[in-house]
Length: 74
Image 1 (cartoon, rainbow, N blue to C red):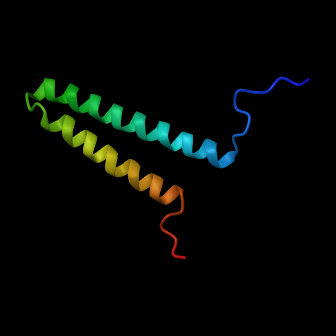
Image 2 (cartoon, helix red, strand yellow):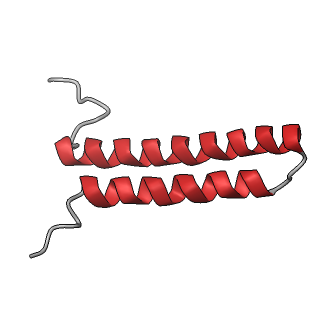
């Protein structure tokens, strides 16, 4: 009897969605961390961290919108 893989049942679309979620999470986390770092340097707390998180969220959402084909008219 063949041993089942941990990823049994996933298709290419599932991996694409998982990749987009990981990309969005890393983007938001990275930009927020960069904002906190720059806030510490310039004394602008919390404005650069909030701006980084907002820009990353908007940019990541746009990437998901374009990648998933939600911009196509039916």
